[in-house]
Length: 115
Image 1 (cartoon, rainbow, N blue to C red):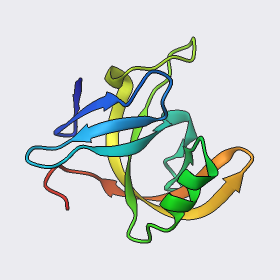
Image 2 (image 1 turned 180 degrees about the vertical axis):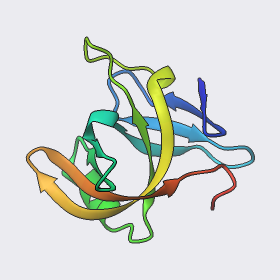
Image 3 (image 1 turned 180 degrees about the horizontal axis):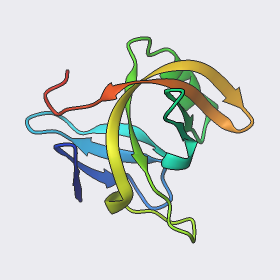
Image 4 (image 1 turned 45 degrees about the horizontal axis):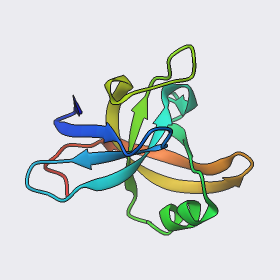
């Protein structure tokens, strides 16, 4: 388990694009993981990869936004919780079918004290 932005974070399972986010005194929240290469810092947008259309629809319906983890992939394509660089709030903007995911607006870096 890695500590990132005050949270404890670990990948949900091997090959998952989700992470278990644990903040003190709260239940585990499963959040999507995306990659630094999919983050347009100057434009404030990020593409969040999904594995199933049901996940896309679930997150698109979350108008108040949701948390994501952003990480770096190694040169061989692998990653671990130690490669997660930050936890952020994003707001869904547009769904994509190919590749499957959501383009999101970056809102702010998340803190454990956030609701």
